[in-house]
Image (cartoon, rainbow, N blue to C red; front, side):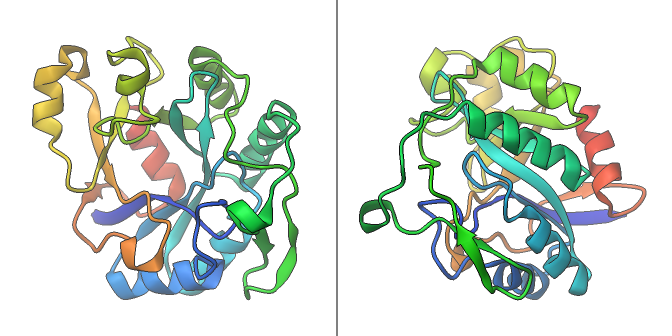
Length: 236
């Protein structure tokens, strides 16, 4: 079956995420747009994943718990899991390896942790925009050891992409996929970086606002629309 997806969404926990990007709002917008599978990938945190998974389930939408990790090289890496426990284990690892710099809500906004009904549970005190001290190769190994899948984010962009940081797409065996902005040109990228051959392009929105979430445009064929089935596909 064809499952329409957007696998790169930020909630109000991300310092650059709009406060309207709440678990219930994200889930409802995904349903309105006709999406079958979404992923919550806040910057360096998975603390809103559980609430978004529960809110999405109420709308019949599958939500993968995930994270957009910033590596030591300042490369953004989409990390996806099929269990909340694995995502929260990564959350703990990443939190311990972020610099101990406190958020400035007056500059970056509040980093809000909510429940599935959008009630405020607390604020993340550590600034999530910073790079971790985890190198790219180690990050890929950590995610794989936790049973997840990761791939470089928005490689067509001039900042925080693996191509901008390294000048090439790395020959990393864990990267069977690469993310392209939803209006990006995957074929042009494959011509520019020959070692993308044989890797799957994933088109996602990197939405920080409700109006940026993708419509039902990009789909993946799966035996069933589930987190496990999607991860199995991405591992291939």
